[in-house]
Image (cartoon, rainbow, N blue to C red; front, side):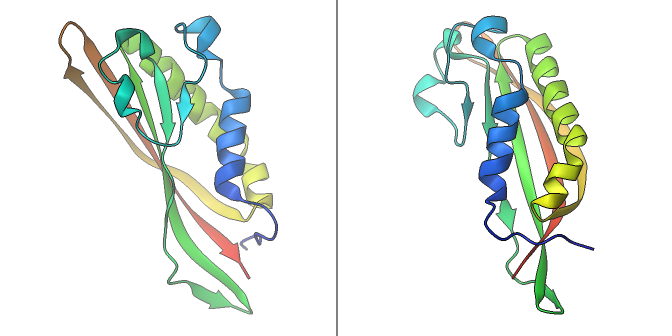
Length: 147
């Protein structure tokens, strides 16, 4: 059974949850303080000291729902993209994200998110002028309910 979203904004809750529980990169990974973002920081891409950063992409949501007893239920997907100049930082941040998402499943259910599952991850790297950027993408899919 899918819980129902009423006054909770699950994307904002997810963003806050990750930001509140993941290790702060200012003390452990690099020297910047705003490193969890909602979109790709194009102005930072060529600055080696801007890495690592984590992007929590706005969710893809299907508003063509199945309606069950007045409650609408539909599929959604959220993607996390990690960029770093060190592959070990990319792996550590990815592991932190997965652990948080898995550990908070009950809280997501209360917010209206059900059957959350990681559907895949991928790795690639991009050469920049004088350094390499490692990228790991993690995809989650889930069902959510609302009135």
